[in-house]
Length: 91
Length: 299
Image 1 (cartoon, one colour):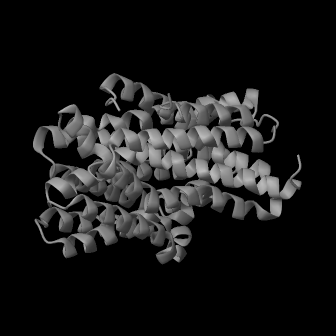
Image 2 (cartoon, helix red, strand yellow; image 1 turned 180 degrees about the vertical axis):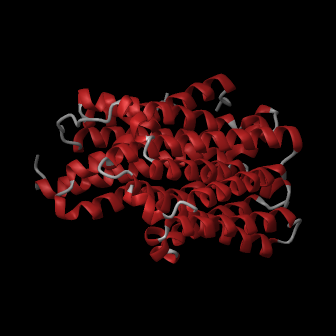
């Protein structure tokens, strides 16, 4: 804890902002990528709307459940679990 | 690098959805816990500005990365950055006491509030309409208007920049007259969509339409969110929890409708679908507006 607590707080707030940036990028990446993905899978873009719709509909369901979970485990743990899930394509 | 198959990408998109729900439901809460009370507004603004930066810079960069490398490299890059963020947050985020979260039963009871219901219906049609067409933004500019990849990245940037300008251009109206603001946005987006649909080649009118579309759409989420907070009476956290779910569900529904239209009828029908959904949104706003806001608030 070498940093003064207030700059640490603002760094934490900026880290959430970076998360917002990366989450919006990830959710909406197919908007920029659909033609390329369709070409590499040999299909039409109309067959790939699920890349956007499935995560969004799941997010609608998981939001209240994760909020309930945060009531048990605390916001920190659930925030870290969420970011871990977002980073899943890392292998 | 091997091209990831459909099953692998589907699994990652599902995990992304679960994580996104958690992130969106907690982002504001964590901000409120961390920031000193007198700087709360600034903290919330910083947190949500990440989304604006994503629309301005993020999507054009993702498109560019896909052009110079490949689409899965773009997705992998995001995942690597998110893994780095996980480590950073593991160090930076302090332990916070569990918050009392709204129960599922209380979410259902909040839906009984008529002003809040109005906001959620407006969210449904406006957001579904938006993502019916926006999901196919790149595809439609490439296929219908034969734009080069570089032009498309420019279009993504122009759209994102206009989105960020929107809330400033309409600053006064977004909080003072939300229903009126949303009706104007619907009209503006509708005209832009018709313009873009009738466009066949030349880029300048298309860019004008994209600028108008972005500016009007950019004001919509902020307006809906503020209206939602105002309409949820003494339970703002219930209102914002419902809003997160309603926004994401509508986004997903709109993308799914757009997908069906593009699949069955062709790429230009994504825009038509948006127009129909937006018309339904305008009708809903009109129906509720006969119940004057003043009276509704007193009830």
